[in-house]
Picture 1 (tube, helix red, strand yellow):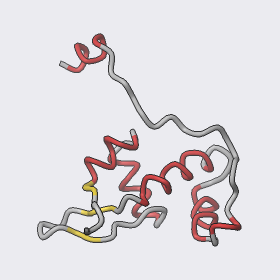
Picture 2 (tube, one colour; picture 1 turned 60 degrees about the horizontal axis):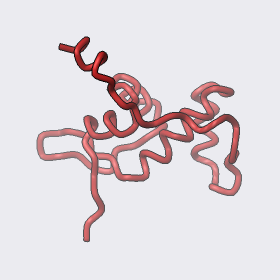
Picture 3 (tube, rainbow, N blue to C red; picture 1 turned 135 degrees about the horizontal axis):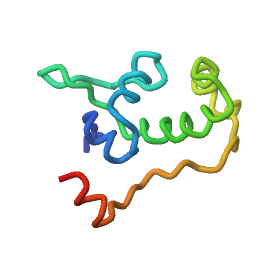
Length: 101
């Protein structure tokens, strides 16, 4: 069974990270699309979510250039806990849903 690939909208939805931030992380090489659609849309593997979680935690204490070096290091050399896990789910309330209308 082929691996599920995610378009940027799905990455945004499941990671609670803005489109601009995803684009910035891609441009900086922090995350990398594994493929593109025929129309040129970037596709990300499921691994992008673990990588984004690490970025959320590590950027609290480090600049993004340092975070990239840490991400590129072998797994056993990466820091395990630098901060509390970032919250990844966002539950809309009725009030916030009305505000968006």
